[in-house]
Length: 156
Image 1 (cartoon, rainbow, N blue to C red):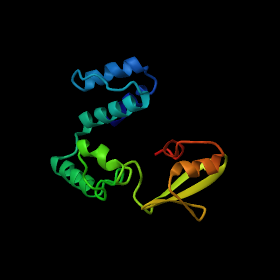
Image 2 (image 1 turned 120 degrees about the vertical axis):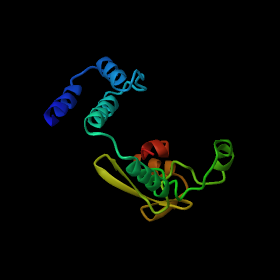
Image 3 (image 1 turned 90 degrees about the horizontal axis):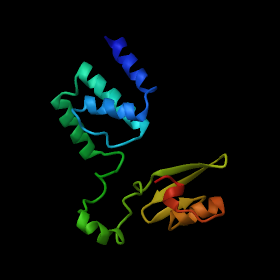
Image 4 (image 1 turned 90 degrees about the vertical axis):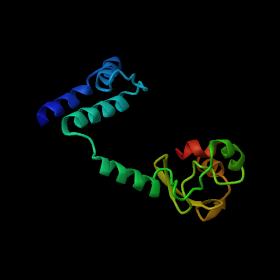
C-alpha cells in the first residue's frame, strides 16, 4: 500500500502543469488550483494523497497547532508585534516598525559574490560591520556599490 502512494507521488514530478491542475481538481472536490507553480502543485497533491491514505491530523492536534502558531508564530513574529487592523495599518506604518522586518536581534545573512554578509536587526536600524545604518538600502549600496532596494537585496 505504501509503495503505491510513493509511486503516485514520484509520478507527479513527471506530469505537466495542466495534468497537475486536473489531478488537483479531482482530489480537492472540483476546486480549481489557485497556482500554476509546479512545485506547489506537486506538494499539495502529495500531501492530499497521503492525507486520504493515512488520515489527517486529529482535531486535538489541529487545535494544539493553532495554539502554538498563535503563541509563537516563528515566521511572522505575530506574538511580538502589536495587532493592527487593515484600516489603521497604512496610518501606523509610518510611526511603527515595518511589518516585513524580523524582530530586533535577528541576524540577516546574505551571500553576495562568494562572500557572506551579516546584518543585525536593531530596534531602530541595522548594524553592519560595526556601524549602525537607518535603512537596509544603505547597506545594500555599501555591499554592491549600486542602488538596491534593501528588502529585495536581503530577500525580505
